[in-house]
Length: 278
Image (cartoon, helix red, strand yellow):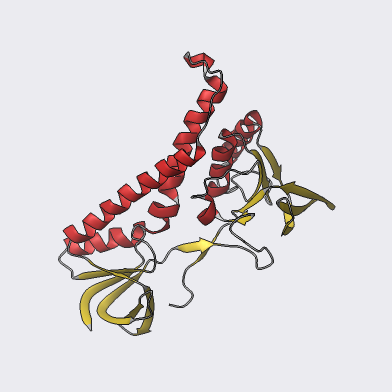
């Protein structure tokens, strides 16, 4: 059994920064994560999505404003798989940076599922089922969150996806229904629209990005309209199902119901904490 001053459960931006600072202050530190150093943010979230957004910005400029900047194309070809590959390279480079910081600061890294077995005791179970017990006077829980999906909506990873599948998929759908207009929803709407996908965003609340200022929502709605992104605000999703050709999403508003169809649906309605099983 190994003993530490601090054990951090979760190696995302909250966890690894906490671990580094504690080590810098002279603490003996261990960090545990069941999947990735850098967490969702560096691996399948903030960082790769921003890399894709940069590609989307360039693609949109070339498609819509090329002549304005002195470019002319007879047959402009946009390579989305190359954009995804670049986003993975950006992500991997930063993850390696976190690995270096762990070594530099003398932080012991354990990959596996952590359980608070007893006061000051953490059991880490690796992918092969082997348990390792760690003790510490102090334990920080920084386990982050996972995509929230109603149980009736079956995510199959192909026709119905969350950000987790969408961030690495190289094949673009011809059309997509994005459920939820938070950061993830509007980012993917922007990226996919820039590559020619027919995008519809469905939001239950009265405006896009409802947690932002109203002025931000208004400007985003204008930008989406200009780009040809369809927005259905104030619409509740009643059901999500698959068809032979894609997906069928039933929405309602003001007592009326309608059915939307597309090749794919992205569920981006929020997150729930990763606290189960601790």
